[in-house]
Image 1 (spheres, one colour):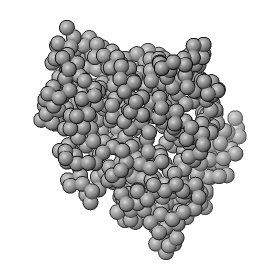
Image 2: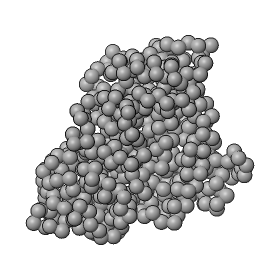
Image 3: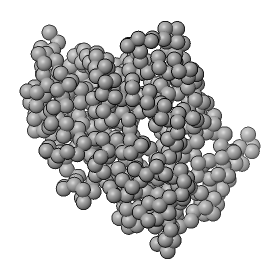
Image 4: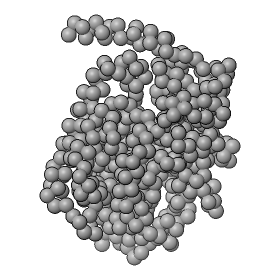
Length: 495
């Protein structure tokens, strides 16, 4: 205990020493590397980089150019902020590696088995992408899972009907609905109650937040190689998360192994089990796919609701379009929602202004290469500031305004072919679930706005909404939830 106290007392001085020792400033004179500031400049403004890194890095780009570099400890980080350089990075095999904190890779089952976080696009990564494409991401798989989406949305609607006139946390409702859609596609099971009011619900939500938070927070061992062997805290935290992941999926895996399906009704779990994946590997993959399929999708749906509520004329136009083009008797026809061009434009404009995860998942140079005529050494962390590209006045007229009509008559889509608009990234590491995410967002929001009127509680004002939107730019914050009051406007559905 005494040694621990002594270590904690001297830790700040150790950090200052190592930061000073390793923090090498990058200037225009060092022509091989992209230019950039000295690390001390960043440390003096650490609160801005911690709370709004997408803004802070965009400010640096205005000084040092669209490709700049910084050193944090022994780690070189390069940041791209223009569509031209983004294209060069995202289309380049040598910059297709991933960088996540070592804590994430310390969770048993994740080291060599990941789609989202695989360090390189190796054979296992390709195999998992192929399985995912067949059972989750392809047009055929999306069509096959139509009934799952519809059933989960109906559960949401029936719950909301019982809450008419009450203030409720709409984030929780959307999150639970999307999570249960994804969980049923993965393993034919619900994971959450619709209002997240159970102890198991809260534990699982906390675990998801912890995994996402720590996957975005490098530890000392990731920045200073000298600490890698001493980083017992990360290993202990990884094992704690592993036990919770096993607790979440353990009974489901045991039950499902007893009845593996080989027919047309097989799901993602059936395929993994038939291909001899271990329980640890299956649990890890199910959790990764669950988080990837729910976290950012929920953020987009919540943000879209906020934008529609703040712009009533746009909301009325969306409702009219859904009524005229997608209504099938007393239900919304999902297949025709994609034909609602203005509604689709609203989704695109929401993703442009409020992309979930301003940098996506960091890239890593798998070997030394050239980007924009600068040298990028092997293992450099590479960030693409998608937020800055989406608000670049060179790409968009009046970029900070919410104007869905900018996408009408435009061929700009979600799929990474247009580098001024990259909500799901592009290239080899583009999010494979882009179409699934859009399907979930459009179906849930269409039902919410067509069948209900929504009001904010008296204590929700413009300041509250601005704070919620600021938080949603970087993370899904439960501490500052969006509460709304539903009122049924289309009764026929419930008769």
